[in-house]
Length: 449
Ligand code: ATP
Image (cartoon, rainbow, N blue to C red; front, side, top):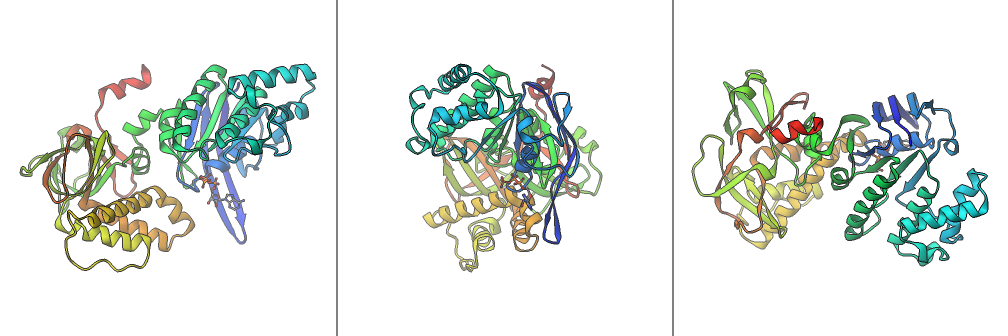
């Protein structure tokens, strides 16, 4: 077990005549025995960071330290790490036993019986004792994943490095393995760095999470710190499902305004905002309280239900804050995001099954826009960046709320949405930095508890 430290680590790839900055001046420290999750959208630099720690990629500048040693120039096989990949990377011609023993045979001078004992102990830990004489082709995906983990455990390394190890498993098995991996890491106490793009894994598995975007570290903290105290709009939008709502607003005399919103700020929030400046008002879907009918008013927005998505335990309610955001807006966003279809002419599909489908596709496209935004802009600043901008521009006329599964709402219904002042976040529109995060006393105490 060892502490792992990255100090101003940068990785630049040469891509023909271009340079790709995959990891940009990242500094972070992973404590001895800690489970750290590196998370972010595709292309944000997670795998490159992990591969530099593993020694599979060189470091352009900065230092990586494992335990007391700077390892920048130490070959991978001498770093005392074990890596688990998404692809499992098992040797097809070897049995499970041979796969698990191979690393020890190659890198240690341990006696045969010691190796056998360690393989059997690890196999037992992973519940694969019965599979030791099989070859990988005769195993299910879940069993192969267990072998890959067992092969890492058998080496008893200082550090586990895991790159999306569960993403080839079906949803149920993934949920089961999430819990098992946490238990295992707890039992072994081995420092673990775990890469994923799945924010559910990030929220549930790590002691802390490090969120990357465009190669830049956006925040490192406990999952709940990142959820409730995001450093910026990117973190706020990336962590949480459905994502946080964002409304572009101007600050006028203690009130946040746009064409659909007039939201008076509590005095302490107003104090941290510049008069006349542009901000983004953020509110999580689960913090919005809905009621049927009613008038607007302080912290109440009049809205129309566009689409309702029942998930069983809760309903996700997509709301339009003005007429233009109903149905037609979904059409527009699909046309922008998916292909060259013409927006369907006029008509209000409200209440029809078509509206449901369009709304769902629209929200999917919006979700993809906010998640993939920076990587899209980084790799292809033209069409994909424009798509993300177009999608985001429409967001100020829409809100998503989650309500209990027994609370029924219907498409076309007039509602009022209450945005509790204690639950709002405010971001600077220019820099996207958080200028105010929600109040939540329990969370304020959590880091020092
Ligand atoms: P994913 O979740 O899709 O695997 P990631 O966050 O792990 O993404 P990386 O694989 O670390 O991202 O890639 C970060 C950036 O570096 C991307 O823009 C990628 O295209 C680029 N990149 C990675 N490897 C190379 C390479 N060998 N040559 C050039 N560019 C590269």
